[in-house]
Length: 415
Image 1 (tube, rainbow, N blue to C red):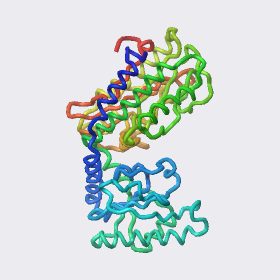
Image 2 (image 1 turned 120 degrees about the horizontal axis):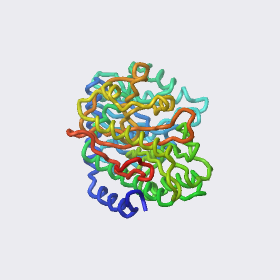
Image 3 (image 1 turned 120 degrees about the vertical axis):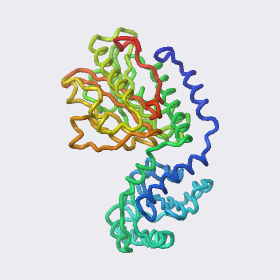
C-alpha cells in the first residue's frame, strides 16, 4: 500500500478520469497561436525550431525525440503569417501526415558532421537556401528569423542570405508559459501516470533491491501508459542522498535508509511530471535526524507554495521564501521554484543569496504551472531529503497538481 492508504488502483482511477476527451485539435491550435503571437510581438518573420520540445509544442509532431536532441536531423519552420513546414528525417514524412496544423512535410537537409562529414559547409548552404526561400516567400520583406539552435556553419549560411538571427528560445519559453485548458488536462494525465508509478515504487521498495531496480519501476509504468522518457536518474538511498544529484546505481538499499528521488518524467502527451518524494525503506521507525530533515523540507515546500499567486514577482518570492537553516545553505537546491510544461521551463526563481548573481525578475501569472523545490541536507551530513510539488497558479493562489501523500513515518507532526 502507498502512503496514507493510497493504492495503485486509486491512481489508476485518477488516470482514467484525466485521459477521457482530450481535444488534440484544440490543444494544437492553442499552442500554435501562442507561438505566432510571440513572433508577432517580436516582429519576426517566423521561427526555425530544432529542439524536439519546441517542435512538439509548435505543431505536435514527434519523432525519436531523445535521439534528435543530439542529432539535429529534423526541424520546423513556422511562418508568422504563412505555413508550418516540417523537415523530417529520412523516409519519415508519414509521421506528420494526420496533424492538421502542419501544412507541408519535406525531407530534411542534415549538415552536422555525423551525417555530412567534410561536406557540412556545403550542405549547410543548401539548407539555408531552402529556408531563405520560405522567409522571402512568407516574410513580407521581414528577414528577422527566430532560431532556437544553430551551429556556426548554419549561422553563416543564413546570414549570407541577409537573414538576421534572433533568440528563438525566448519566443518559445514565453509562448509555453501560460497553459491552455487542454494542456492542463494533458499535464494532469501525466501527473496521474507519474503518481501511479510512485505508488508502485513505494509498494515494491524492500531492503536489498538496488536503486536501479527501484528507478526502473518509474520507467516501466510511464512507458506502459503512453509516457515518453525520464530526463534524469536522480534516485539515491542512505548516505548517497547527501549531497544531492547522485544518479541511481547498483547500491543495495538497506532497511532504515531513506530513498530520495526526483521523477523528471516526460509522460503522456509529452508533458512533464516533476515531483520529488523521500521514502523510508523497511518497517522500522525513522531516526530523529531523518524526521527533522524531512520536516524542514516539508515546511519549505508548503510555505513557499502558499506564497504563490498571480502578480507576485520572482524577486518578491525570492525575498519572502522560507529561509534555509545555515547548516543546509551550502547544499541548497539551485532554485526555489521553476516552471514546468513539456519539460522544465521558464521561469527559474533563485534563492535570495543567488539572485543578484544569476536571478531575473518577472511576474507569476494565472495558468502558469510551476514546481516548488526543496532539498534539505546539511553540509557534511549523512542523509538528505528531496521533496517537490507541481502546482497550477490560479486566481486564488496555488492549486496542487501533485497530491501524492507524504511519508507519515518521517513527519514530526500530522499533515
